[in-house]
Length: 123
Image 1 (cartoon, rainbow, N blue to C red):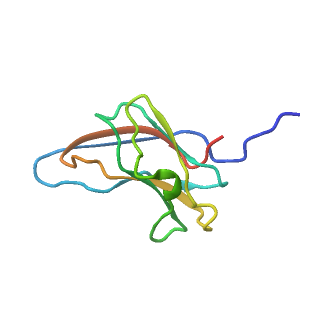
Image 2 (cartoon, helix red, strand yellow):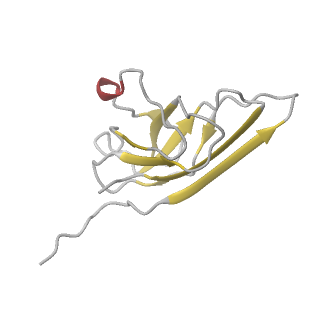
């Protein structure tokens, strides 16, 4: 008998771009996805135009959002270069939230491109 993963671990594509000199974007969110278990979120930087260096996991039950990043693990050092993957420890499931998303601060919010694969749960 083989064990089966119970989580929502299938990768979702998130792509975002901005290229203007008028309005800076400082907060970017993936779509909310169901969080099925207490595993880490998974993030793979496909082809962003640089290092992703500020991201958090947020939880929600359909209204508003709450930062559920595990800061004991994070230690202010979360970076993910193109071609790299990270596991984002969080408290979404444990805090009773049904949905998770990744919240990015794109750094240069005038000219930026983000393309990642992510999942709310991991194997």
